[in-house]
Length: 259
Length: 219
Image (cartoon, rainbow over all chains, first blue to last red; front, side):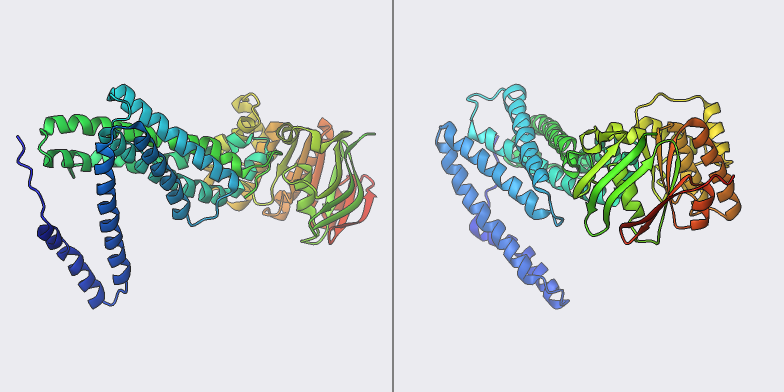
């Protein structure tokens, strides 16, 4: 069974009507964001065209090096994206923790998912490796970006409580415990919440894609359930590493709070 | 008698510049001076919450910078001017100091005893957040009394109290410190209080020691 409807160029252009309507509304109401919206849509189009060609090429080349290079590029942009998203200033020590948590957390989760859950063979099979890694890295990136912002603002907002605990002889880990725990909860909450509405409020992207490509919904949910658990695991692991080591960036070697 | 603290050639930003200062052991010392004279900064240095830019601080003869800061803060506990109230009940707040300093928990009778000492008559299960400013100050004081450290660093411990409660608490606090052989270092800008309660007074002015004096017992 493969009754997949192909979208032709004209049909694709027809979809841009949505963008035209939005730009018309924004312009008419004087909101002044038409340029931003136009460039965002243009960027999305160009990026996806390029990635389409790139993946087409990589999928045709059965060599592990292409997969590894793409994985490294994804990780690199994920880390850059985290730093560019955060409006607060980040200490160099915290930057190091962000990089290490993103790399180790995502790579461990990807390896477990692909080699244990999926038993991928060959291990670098790009058709599976790249999209699944993309989903895991993308979600971990969102979690870590949220986590870093919450950690910085939490340490600043609760300065008095943390110093109050230090004055009483608390170790930094105990003094910062409430900030660390709240940061962890806040950063994994969007992933946990997205699981709640899944299948009722919306059909997740990967499952939708598979169904559109003609795969049985029963097969598609297997993948979706597994990948959601993989994403949950990776987000939790990266955020845990971030908060577990990241809070220390706010203390010096004399266990004094340094914001 | 040995000194609790000896400070030598201490400089901290443009806030403190102390050539030498000795704070006696097992005595009540009052730090006096106008606001902005560096009293709180001095307490923070003694609690090792901050470190001097230059100079040495000795605690019981040992270089403070070489001591484990967490261990030191468990022996030299500080009470900030604005009382810190942690989320939870009065009981949880009282016990929080013991939790932080990893000391064994105490029986409920002991909690009642310290609350009496600071004249705080509240149920243990009362949420600490609903207490008034003065009650929070007494709660924070009771918390450190329960910890039973060697040195108490108190930053204006009675600033939010009325005159009568202030007197009752300071009487009880200084009596406790003297009877238990504790060192009490208390910041105040009330000179009369310093003269009344202290064994030793230190006058600070714009970050410098203006004078130190032993006070004759007058109780």
